[in-house]
Image (cartoon, rainbow, N blue to C red; front, side, top):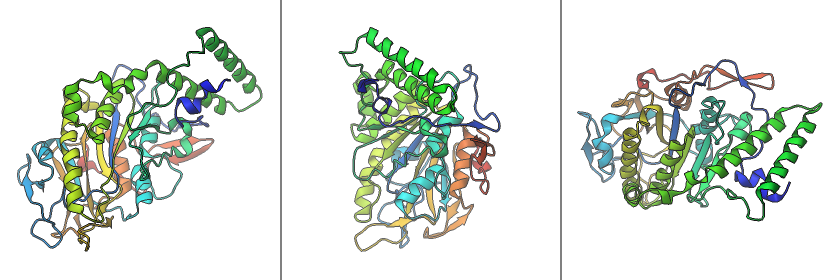
Length: 414
């Protein structure tokens, strides 16, 4: 087959799927008459400070220089750097008592996205792509949008034992995957001849061999072809100048605008990474910049999803790999902290206007309702209508979909 048709190039790294296996119980809705459940993961890479966002501790030695402001939930305050979020707090679900115990970027990125400490399990995007897929799906189920840069450890990019079919297709700097346009030198007749040879080769390979690899190849080939036919879904120039302005011309705003576009196209899971929260120095300066981007864009995105009738079947998760230390170091920064920090959700399957858990007066310990990372993973799946107690069945072996030692947080579920 000519190099033009390399599936590795067509899907920009989404390689052949190897035996994805089955599930011990139906976990996904196959009916196309109901709206598809979808996940939007907004990952705050580096670890944003809970003190400057969801859990301010004003007037204490750990509180920092910013004020707390009132929100649309009576008696609940958040940091003044999130004025737009404060106005829609009644639409959000905030957890203030995450206790992951992890203060390492690489381990945190994997653990917070897989719900596990042990390696080899699929991350959330890959799991959702598998569990929410439908028989007639042709587009990839999981897309990860980020900028190009050295600190790309957010791309754990691991479908684990589910196989490469469920790896995230990476969109870097809002550029579509490579090779979505067929070379002009390849005529339709030549393309058909190549495809005919491919199908014939597949049939010969199947004789006396395990079918899973060739089936995975075929699936990935058809996904690549579907992306070529629908490459306009990556074209942000089709969005209005007003939308570009509303979302913000910064990279996070434009990435979220593309995420909305991809969700509208029917993809099960889209992840957007917002970088540079790792403020070991000048924490308060950096959080002013990052929060200004995040605050306005998040509310714009939620408004748009709601107005389009998408929020009722889309779960929006806002999380990073850790929080920041209560102590302010001698560079005016906050360091890594996994003992007690905050995250948020909105949309499908979760109760709006809930602030769950709390920390003590200085934010050094969880005061009530501690939440483990495995609990969050169970909760995400349940909010999407997936029974998180079920198991994958891969090559004759079973594996729990979520950590059996953890459980969903019922107080957060609608």
